[in-house]
Picture (spheres, one colour):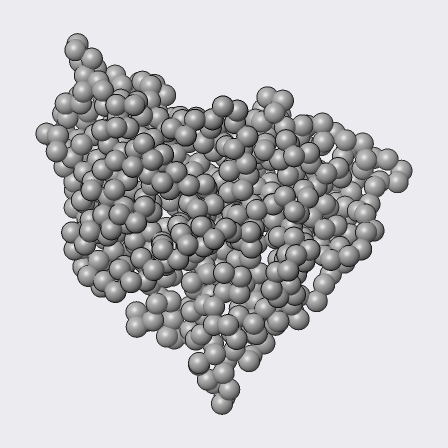
Length: 596
């Protein structure tokens, strides 16, 4: 498989069709001093100002949330993506990822923060007029005003374009908004709302709506499973007079606002989940070291080591993928010719380009976080089920991540769907690669993975094989269903899982290879984490591919495809038990996640 040229790496999905040079990939080990200072600032803010008042936040003292938003703004944490002209600090997406990781230490605060920084500030910056930016962004970035994002309705969750909220056009160009939005984070105390409604019942459009306008009210607080320290309410619009200048973007183009904001929101949610998983790993390691059964610490038990090692390996893959993706987005933005500091277009284009990777980040992030937090409860045993320990609260808080920013089911349909649309538009040579693989499979002596040796040699072969398996399944699906493939949700979901594991595995392997080539501390841990994840992922990919192929073919055709799958996935098993044991012992010794 050919190495991807540097200009090709700036295209979403290009990683699937070639090899990436490890030295070109962004990793946490490459953070600058400025990045580390940002991480320290965000971490200290959460530890010193948020965590001590958690109980009060969960008693719905929303004035405290407003104070925290203002303090966060004063530190510059709300404006990492906003130019200085509007009060921001205009940092790269690596910095944004870092801040998102740190605020996740308390999930309720992460929700409040995300609604402000991700879902209110970003759409105004990316789609607002100059007058709108000047009017709203400085106060939002400073935390002087609080924002919320109003997309969902009781009858339109995943089907956002099915919204019933109406904006009736008036003769003077203004509008009257009527409807009810549901599950609005910050809904109980926000000043500014990004509201989506259909102009004249037809044209899906975004508006900037102020709480002070007559007819805007917040409903009762929802009684939620988790996130008790964040406000979630309906927002009710009763004949709200809205000026023409409140339209955000273009009339009838609200989907562009909604979906592009969601692209970045999904990426940031993946980062928040990564931060939450790291915190839970440290918590589990400390508890396992302190808790004794049968006269010894439970951290010495093989079953507990398995859990801690697997938690670490999965988080390593997630984190590697997150930093790799952030690096790609930054590189795409930086490659824009004649880029102006106050122009949001390059960022918008980069987010659109890497929408597939953003959805992968959302799905993998939320599911790795769930896995880690569930295992944290299990390691705590009975103590994990009571509120005296943080494990119980983390468990409840994390569950919504698989629903936020588009359910994981929706994102699983989007991942292969968006890739195939890029292929059909000629933006990604996916169809040609799938046809080439079919020719290779049908040849008398199909090409086998390289016999190169060295660090992570078997894992590199596994990743190359996994990419070919993705092409095998994708090519079969396109050939079998054509345009009707969009209706085959089971096949699309299976294909998404193959893509997720392949991208995560390659990201982990590339990070470990880059660490091995430098002076990174504890290279063995990097190699163990990447290897353990990749070998388990290879097994999942082979099993998932078998199921997907069986859904699309039968008889001799299926037998031929399964034979090809066996030839492609000739991965020699590794002793992942010893890898997990080493990772677990080091995690317990450190009392925290190993790599951050």
